Image (tube, rainbow, N blue to C red; front, side, top):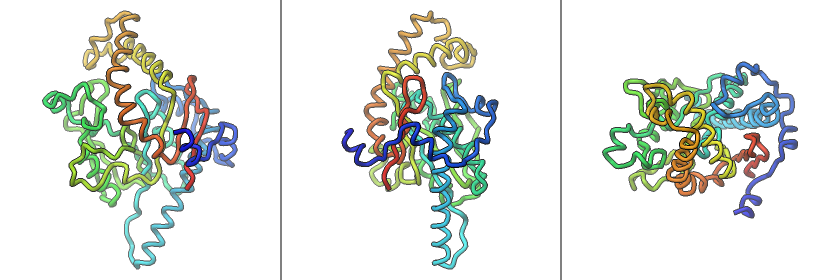
Length: 313
């Protein structure tokens, strides 16, 4: 595995990667950075300057090159068609910080003059409702590939890529742990669409055999946020303890029963959920897709990116 990665990727330390920022300006205030950060994630201006501004610059170069390629095709065909949106896929384990990374990239990319309209969706909205998961005996498999309405997700991505003026996606609530009835996120012809999810780089055998397209087929660039499994487990437990003091105390929370646990009981419960559900999903469906990503961001125990791997193109 390591030899394969070394042969396919250019490896950067924080210091060498930071040099690729060039003169890309930091446009986000400390207040804005704080609003983008998920609970228990760490995100400083220094991390943005050293890691995410160079990444923003790289993505801007790729987006610009792709737009020019589409323009060249239109010139050859003597046609004028709508600009094809650039799709970025963002994958990684539960609790690795995908949501913070996705929101940060959305904010940074939207500040580039050439693509001000950047949308973000998560694949959580394409989970089957709890009602269907219960009927199919999949509640303990939530987050595994078979718990998603993959046909609907593929259709959504295809319609956005085709330039449909408006495309709707379901909305998921982490508080109620279910799809929100009668609520939709509407996407309006973005320049860039960021898609964040656990299994988006996977070519899924649970799709009907006649299905020709997979979620991973739509992405122009993919990112995998990586971390050691022992760190992921610790972050999951820490987040569970934080939720025990906050979100779980909301009467409408699906997990309100956990709010009354002692610290010791909460740690034991979180560790049990991690090993029973999240570890099998990580080993079976998420981690095996890491090498498919164009870029791997490897985090250390302190949540900071310690290494960047860029696939040779």
